[in-house]
Image (tube, rainbow, N blue to C red; front, side):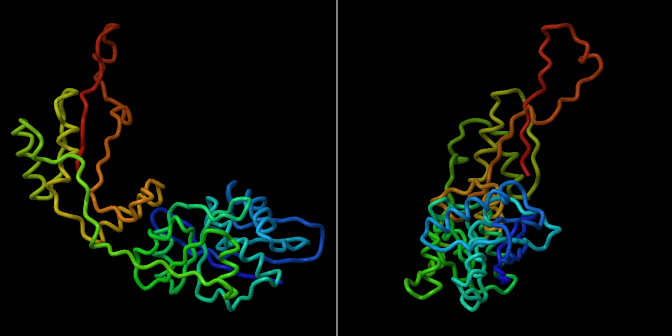
Length: 303
């Protein structure tokens, strides 16, 4: 029997719909996953099998072929555990296709059936809404993140059995309420008014902030470049909802989104180490005597 469940993959900053197909046939017991999966996806065979059995559900015997389409898109991460488990339950007759119409499923499974956090839920939910899905089942820890998008029912799932009971109508799960995005206020780490001195530098940053210009600060370590750059977001205008969603999407994909903050509304500040770029030394300095300090001056780039 063939079963199909919809999930999502992350390509860059965008979500791509993935069809999780499961086919059960007679033969020696085994699970084969195709569709360009990485190691984490291949390891889902053991996680899904243990989670289904420990949840008190029946894992079908025989040969299972799991296809993740489109096959040209590489599948990464454990977010396909829950859709694979649901597709297996569909193929074995424990669930019915009509129960999953217009639904997308995302989540990692532990061996006891607990649904764990996955990264990139916000772009996945955005792709689901864009493709016309009405419902999305996500880990309970990621539900506030997906609830940022309107016109999409977000169901938080804690256990695999909770999802099965909800689909059968035994214990319905209430969808997460939409997040009031406008009620969130940005948090400022360093206020521009707290900096004493640095009048020329502060004046240059004020002009850059007012005119939306880029700034390149060059100077000796300890001159105050990082402090000025860290305080610059405090004089910038508050991000719009579209800008906040774009920043939150990047944090979500990088798995840097705080658990208690589903939406980033503070303009981000990044301070990369000065060794990330190679210093260009003149030929004379390359062959300078040993013991000479050839370190490049510290730099901060603000865009």
